[in-house]
Image (cartoon, rainbow over the protein chains, first blue to last red):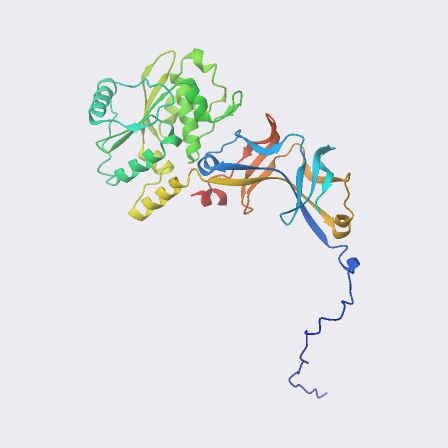
Length: 101
Length: 271
């Protein structure tokens, strides 16, 4: 069988027409199964470099979080919620107390 | 000789007269103390300056350079020992063999002090859980050439150690060029700069739907077990170590469980 091989000519696309409304709208169903990773940060500490280098097992480092105050839930480093630290069986859990808009 | 100083005493170089007096004392009370390192260590002066700069880490009162030999002199009281350990009162301490990091040098020295030089009535105030070195001689060959008791009373314990080249090379890598000395100086200069750290309890994976429907009152369950240590990271995401979460006075706090060993990447990055 003879097959003709030739250069392909792709059409030039024009993206200048922005007046039309997006046809997909907010089709959240398209992303509803996309997983996102939330980080739970119990607090922060600031140590001088000398102190950091001298850390050893058993050292106690206080955090900036006062006991019984909400801890932070972050998405890509951005605060999205706060919650109360809980024990859920043998694991840590967090009960949401505040959704950050 | 001034070997019983109130604590804490900032380390300082002895005057020439004091140095001579000390050396005379050492020679009269100890044998085989002063080794001539000059033949093998022509560049010891930059090293000595480095050790002097690290005095807060060493916690010693004096450094004496005599005939190219470095002597570190400790004169400690119980409060100094606690300060040296940098631990809250009541904290249990496990000593370990030096792994090349300066903190372990301190622990070894405290081991020596608490085993041999601290009076019994003061030992009870030092919360020592475990000591691996059976006696001070265990330190010999581990970087300490000699340990001498140069005085002790009910209030203070004085100790003098001659640091071997092994120890100094291990703990304080010798500067071999002006460039290296500058690097060392810069590192010391930033010693007080603050490093922000995050204590991460872990993460939760949610679908976009679940995230959209998240409400006040919802409970998210983490993979992190209550009995396992959590991780500490720098703001740039580098692992600092692992620690157990607890409370200290009015705040949440971490008790360090594991830190990078000398062979891993975090340790290399420190150096």
